[in-house]
Image 1 (cartoon, rainbow, N blue to C red):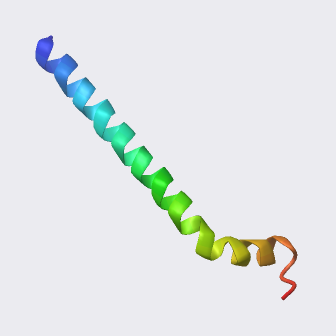
Image 2: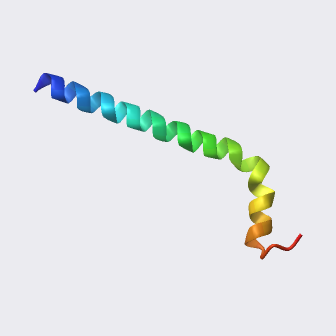
Length: 46
């Protein structure tokens, strides 16, 4: 039982770390593409 709990804790900590990394990556990469997304959301007006 102890090993299973340890594996579950390790899995969830890994999962949270990956999710945080993805969120931070998306937040950091938002700025350069913000104008492009605004252009597309406005119907492609340039």
